[in-house]
Image (cartoon, rainbow, N blue to C red):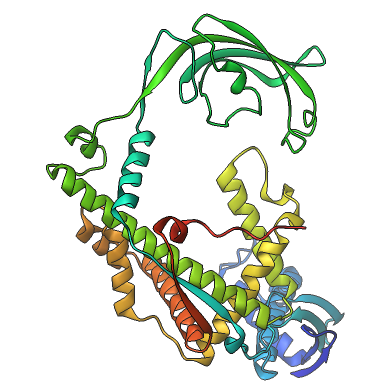
Length: 436
């Protein structure tokens, strides 16, 4: 087998491969002999068909099959011989594809970039520290109560935080527009669910009252046909209900699966969950800073094949998340290219850090992480056992732990500043970078 390689770009390789005719004929004959053992030809017993008849009937298909298999086999033989690491399937172009002659074809493909991860010392990380104070716990209990609020009908004018049951019809330029009407809708005033001015216009309304609201759709409204346009809504208020917060009692505690522990026991469980959330939030913010630093310090070219695969993966995830009657490939690729590139580059960088430092998942940390996740459930032992019986789930945890070990490796050389903050600041999600 003859192989020559041409570098057509930083990552693209054009490889010419020649396969001797003798190897091709050997593969063709092997397939014809296999066919002869099972072929059913009128006038002959199975296995007794003359090879001349077998060759006449089946040689073309056997040759096509042999050539396909040989191209696949010789391509991988060639990349091993040339010590290349393809980043995707090759595009194959035959040069000589004739019976009795050597097979010659060209395989064009991309390779993974070769690089050494650098710049750990240039990465700046602000590591937050915080505690769950009693005031934070009290605030969380109020949040839980509000999340479980009940509404009871009242005979008075509506105020913010009241829930209204309404019917409404919306018009633009005097015409009813699609999606602008509804009946029996439950709306909490002040929730910001409707466009600006709609909820404010219903403050003070009573059950049985009808109001006409004149509002303007925001300029950035998702329906471009309505964005920036004036609209008139005729709204009938069917009922007004006031919020009632539940008491912190056993019935309330039972909703969260916490029984017979009383208020102090419930507070202890909530505090435990808040502390777990706090640890994860701090860990995530440190990790994000490390990954941002690695990206900035290691600009690398991305193989198009990997980028396309990641874009397609993100398309599928978007369809699964948001549903709708749409196929993944109908979503524009440019919507996902920036995120896909970041994920691919980080994947390459993290893999290189793992390789360079010979990192392997710390099984003690794997068990600790599983136990941490399991502690949020009523039967944590069963959750731990489930993970260790499911290889796929267990390997996902191992991957997360390995990524944490990469972060730890970077932090040993990065510039780290510790900062004490409040619980609220520590758990607040980091602001996403603004797009141009």
